[in-house]
Every structure is written in structure tokens, then in C-alpha cells.
Image (cartoon, rainbow over all chains, first blue to last red; front, top):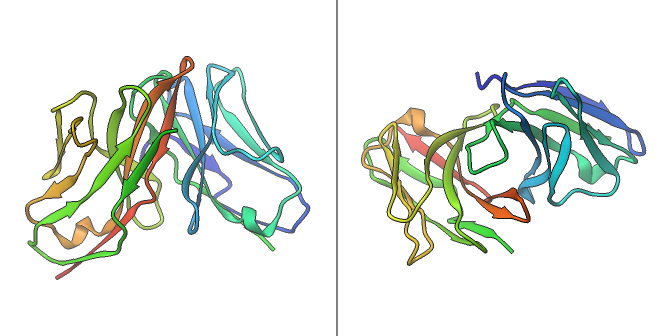
Length: 113
Length: 114
């Protein structure tokens, strides 16, 4: 158990819909990262927050957005969903925004029908 | 940009065989290097890391040495077990514009037969 929690574990929805994925980092960790894992693209870094502020952006689509709240939990919002958005979405946390290793949650499996 | 290239899998071995999974990288700057492991149905977990040239990371019998001259971080284990069957990811983190950008390889699946 990494100490990072993600909800829900599974999510099934339809094209065009909007969903919100939630992540609670390890106690004391200030940085949260979001990743998308799919068979064809591998593990893609989406976005990072540190202590409530966006710090780095990766391959995140404009239809996707995220935020980190004062209690340090984070939410990833996916809108206008397409079939190709079906993937595993992982959240990870680290103590600071640094070279530290990241601790990954168990993931949310999103299926878009 | 930064990138990590891993050998494609699956790698299939018999128990007690020697394992090597190759990883090479390109990075602007001086990265930290990591190997993560993902067991079926789980998130990634750190296996080992190295933060400077010639450092050797090791854990659970796995080793990898940070080779700056060849920009490589190959993962090795002398004798694999069935329980090592998983997907292995090579990754780097490097400073960029005041933040640290993580880059992961595509992962290499390891299957160990009894």
C-alpha cells in the first residue's frame, strides 16, 4: 500500500460525458502527478501540482483539467469524452517537487462506450 | 525533449535465469533515473533509483548503474523468480523551468516460468 488513494476504481461512461477522478496523496506529500496509461501510448505524464499550484504540464488535452485543493487532494476532470480516452489513470505523489521518487495510487480504470 | 527507450517485451525467462532489461535515455540536463515495477492490477512502485553518474541502485536482487557516458540505466538480476513477473518501467526526472518533468519508458513485460 503506497498510501495514495484514488476513487473510483472503475468508471464506465458514454462518449460526450464528463467525469471527475479523485486522488488523495500520501500524508505529508505536497506534489501530485496525473498519468494516463494506455496500451498504445504507454504511461503518459499529464500534469503536476505542487501545494495547490500547477507546476508542470505534459501531454494533457485541452478537454482535460485538474486542480489541487487546500487539503492537497486533487481532481482530474475529463470532459467531452471520446472512445480513445478509455485508459487507466494514475495519480502519484511525492514529498516535494524534486528528483524524489513518486508513490503511485492503484489507478482508476475509465471505459468510454 | 526528454525520452526513455526500453527494450520491447515480453521478455520470457525460466526461473533462476539472468535478467537484463536495457534502458537508454536522452535528457536536457542532469536527470535522476528510476526503475519502477507494476504488478498485475496494481499501480507502479519504485524498485530502485540513482541520482548521479556511476551510482548503483539496488533492491530485492535487482541492480542498475547510472552510466552517463552511454546514457544508459540497464536493469539486471542474477536469478529471477516467478514472483518477479511484472512490467518494468525505466524513468527519469529532470529539472525544467523550475519544475521537475517525469518521463517514462513504455514498459517491458517480464514473464518468468517455473
